[in-house]
Amino acid sequence: MKYIDQIEMKGKKVFLRVDFNVPMDKAGNVTSDTRVRAHIPTINYALEKGAKLIIASHLGRPKGKRVDEMSLKPVVKILSGLLQRQVSFIDDCVGEKAEQAAANMKEGDIILLENLRFNPGEDKNDLEFAKQLAALCDIYIDDAFAVSHRAAASNSAITVFVNICAAGFLLKNEIEYFNKAMVNPARPLAAIIGGAKVSDKIGLLENLIEKVDKIIIGGGMAFTFLKAAGYEIGKSLCEEDMLELARKIANKAKQKNVQFLLPVDAVIAKRATADAEVKVCVVKEIPQDWIGLDIGPATISLFSEALQGVKTIIWNGPLGMFELPPFSTGTFAIASTVANSGALSIIGGGDTDTAIRKTGQSAKMSYISTGGGAFLELLEGKTLPGIAALEK
Ligand code: AMP
Image (cartoon, rainbow, N blue to C red; front, side):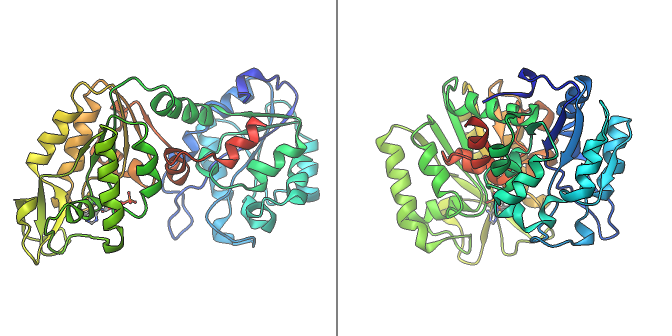
């Protein structure tokens, strides 16, 4: 795969695929610029090198139709503020308007195209639509890791029509950190897996068990494993149809000499609410009407000890219902252990980034992935179409 810093961009029209899928409030204001900021190093680099920059993204799921609330227009102000430069908005992403705007660009100009997903060809990875996108540019740069797990016209088919294709710095970082953790890890390598359901994490667990030295399980999914091991778990989250698989996974870990750690105690409540009465109990003694909603203090110690001396940590999924303060302690405490462990720590998948940002420890982690689903699929050992297209 080529990277942006291996390419001559001076005076060239560069089509940059980004993820500006920013959160917006009902009035149409962008409520966080994190996703835009993530691409600034790539954008600034291209501008410094004299590119004519055509930026394209999706926003939301308009399903191939124009939906005014999902226009990328509000992002112009954010981007132009962050870059301290003028950004022009084109209210289409292909066709005459876009082509004319691209043709009239000078070095250092920036245009932002309208939401790619307003066109039905985007999600269908349509060759004809990709050809139209490709007609706008000389060079294609992909920096949108978060959509790499889905083949779309703007990250897959477009590479058929553009001769020079490369990854931007965000995508490069994602690939490099993932490789450091999973391809050539410093060992011992530990995986912390939490979140709600075992069923969402089967592929990931099966793949990780082949590669890691330790697996630490928390969150709602831990209770399915505990039930599979013969414990009564009260009204805690349990997927009955996953019990057999949970047993298989735990046995496989044993066979492979992978240390497999489950919670030994839990923070329990009768209701999952912020004002619920809470108790701590060992996992053998969860009363019938109670729900396990966080790992308990003995588990925090057990997991923290297991992480001592570990050289690489991969973390996906919160260890409790962290959104509610009474059940956030476990995730916060382990975040602190990971942050201070000295290990290479790579965090991501689903909403794990949100959970870790809430802990206030994110700056101390080695890398927090920008890809929810894409990071999960990497952990599952899958080839991502958006990355494969650049490797061709
Ligand atoms: P996931 O998207 O699978 O990583 O799951 C994240 C969700 O799991 C969060 O919204 C947490 O509130 C939830 N969660 C974590 N621990 C528990 C638990 N013990 N019981 C129920 N839900 C949980």
